[in-house]
Length: 342
Image (cartoon, rainbow, N blue to C red; front, side, top):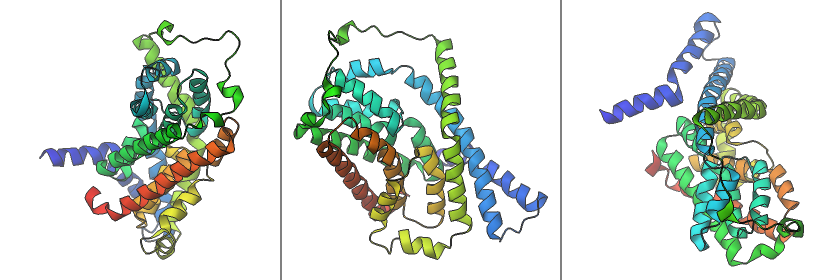
């Protein structure tokens, strides 16, 4: 009974099957589009996903921002400064999940952490996990896949962040950070113990969360529409046989191809979700789809270009190599053991 109740809540609140039924009814009975036509499949996918994603996104951004208000960059930096070694990388990766910055906006935070004297490996663990894994993404992933896959995605994302940061620490890559990042301003001496965090009131946290909803929606709405549009085309107009030939299980290079295709793109996880959903509906393996999503969010070309401004080529190549390798391994493991996540 508990399982049935949970399943019903998941379908109604996350998958929003009620919304799907309304959209299908409108275009079938009111507009009169043939349900077997490609137009019907594409247009119902588009309107259902647009409305669903904006509803979920608004609610989740509000909740995530309310939580994030307890973890300002100063407080995050202060917490990280208290840990050493692998534990510092783990804490850095975990804090990245509750400070959901996109890959580009994470880089100024990375610069601030490095200037403050935090180990380079810890800052990279944060830099990897922050755009890759956040609380909102877990719930949105569950709305498309299931809770097992969503939680497995988080665990793998954190592992990539911890391993990446630890490897960079082991090889002592600090020397490959540009001097202007590591050089402190004259007279600058940050004392973490002396930092007093301003405690926001409940009213201020609510206002901050509402402002974040407006700001983030304003930034991502176009990417969401583009993503849903691409997803609608994949779902309604591209033959399943073609998708399976390129990204299906019969192609041993499907995960590598999905990763390489994702890297040049620029979007956050919200823009990639509708594309991922369309690929899943076309029968593409979960590991291949998740590899594509991770590549887009963690290794987007604009973020790599920005990172090149603050680190030297050897460190940049190590970062890209570690994350790319981790994503590809994850993709093949997800595909191989998909039966465990059903």
